[in-house]
Length: 394
Figure 1 (cartoon, rainbow, N blue to C red):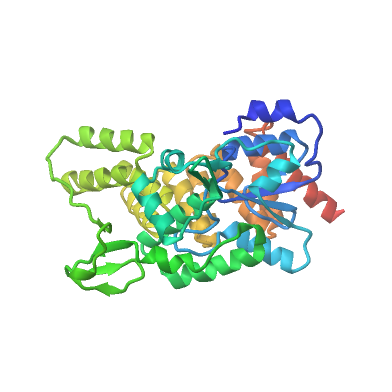
Figure 2: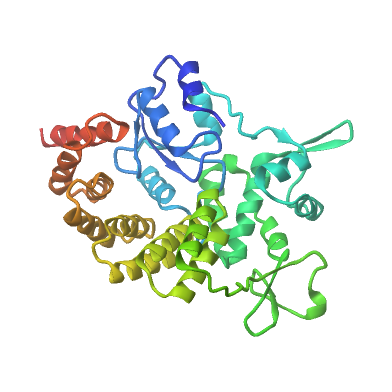
């Protein structure tokens, strides 16, 4: 991964001067914070969400810019709509962005052996060989009898597999991939691979019958030899609340989100409803892409503790991800009522109002935000929005 220090040392000019850049998906070479700081350092402005002022959206290569329901991400969809309506907005992939700023990606985008990729993307060698045999991934080349594969190709197949395993229909993914192929020709997405991928996973339904991820029922003797039966039955151990909650937090911090989710749910089933556990469970579900479940847990936590400011903030963020913008605005306003100096809520609320062209209201919250933060990437973004309003009024 490229560090921000490496990036700034390699780029002396300001190739992003006057650029207003948003991100979609996860970058492989930089964290979102590093990318925002780099954009600022090179003369541009980072936009947390696509607005009328955005000039470029960078599509991260760690996974496809798809939501948990298989639809194209909100930022990319808005960017495409603006572009289609004549706005000068560029849709760029991560490699194009790195080339623009004069950096080389060392995060694993180059050719890798099957074993290296298994460790890099946390997929078993057996699973990767099965994908290779099925034609889901193909070697870039063979050198001294060793095949090399494209990191991005494997990550894409893995992400599609995760979405399908979570229940997203192949028809939805096929439509979204068709959109991405049109909007991002460099993505080189193979629609035919979905049918092969759908048949790889087998799930045991509540009624005991088998079905693949596409929803097709299978006879018992149709189950593939290497198929994975997806199930989890937690062992109900009456551990103390603090022990279970701490275990969930440790798993969440380590990145084992599925296990953390299971422990938080076990904690609730044994010890009853508790706002902090529901809040953490909502955060885990959101990270897993289960936005509707996250919303439900946040609302449940608020019902137990209406003064829990951070829950209101995260509820607003989740509602915004679901394109429920008016409800998101109400949630952030509630957070500010509880804590007037809540910078995260102030920023998100002002940006949402700006996107809705509610300039007067947005200006009030931008000004409030700058009272608490006047020296950061976010502060520069707030000032830029206020200056833009003055120019339009002038």
